[in-house]
Amino acid sequence: MSMLEIKNISKSFRDGSEENHVLSGLSLSVESGEIVAVLGPSGSGKSTFLSIAGLLLSADSGEVFIGGKEVSKLPKSKWTRYRKEHIGFIFQSHQLLPYLNSADQLTLFQDKKNVSKVDAMELLKELDVDSCKKKYPAKMSGGEKQRVAIARAFVNDPEIILADEPTASLDAKRGRVVVQMIRDEVKKRGKVAVVVTHDERILDLMDKVYRLENGRLTEISNS
Ligand SMILES: Nc1ncnc2c1ncn2[C@@H]1O[C@H](COP(=O)(O)OP(=O)(O)O)[C@@H](O)[C@H]1O
Ligand SMILES: [Mg+2]
Image (cartoon, rainbow, N blue to C red; front, side):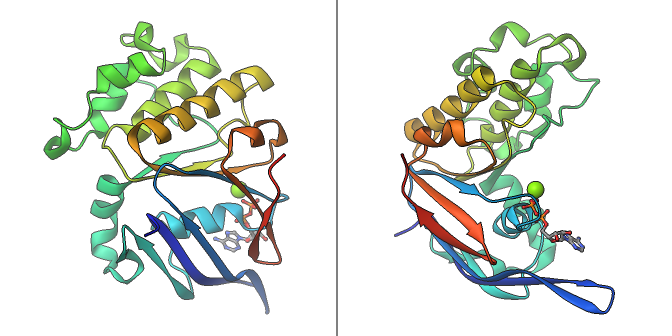
């Protein structure tokens, strides 16, 4: 059974009098322990797709299943709670809060019911930023901030990690390290990660690579 299953998603935005068909019958299936990349030029619908997969946006039609459960039919009033428990997001820029040190960035978001599942300090150690525990974002490098953001995405032990251009603000070397760390966490904890990217240099770290074109995903060979 696929941990994340997206079936036949379509989404249009109204652009003046025109309908802008962004996604048309997009499907994707990802198993536990898999990290996959989605490539595509700017404006091809990558963020729209990720937002629908992460219950941030509703599709016009199609379904999203997580762990076999059709989550897209949950009432919207339950989406926030569901996201918090099951989905971790990593964005292009780290989106850390300026007035919290790294330890508090994680514990603030930690779901109290889940505290026993993942140790926030252990995650910071795994991502090699435990030295930043007491540091505020302004005193940290781009790579350090992004790694704290990754730790935060994993802190509630979500099944699904959705990353939107996580290396865009980093140089090639740091970008690679960050994706390697996402990959290691996915493998170690049996998660699913979908990484939207322009960055062709990280594709060898992916189990599968898809291109988003004409509103659908096509698997492309990964090498
Ligand atoms: N909330 C919105 N309202 C109207 N159009 C949108 C909205 N979000 C995205 N779009 C349009 O959908 C298309 C895909 O956008 P997006 O998913 O952000 O692409 P990408 O992440 O691949 O750059 C673009 O043409 C964009 O202008
Ligand atoms: Mg985008």
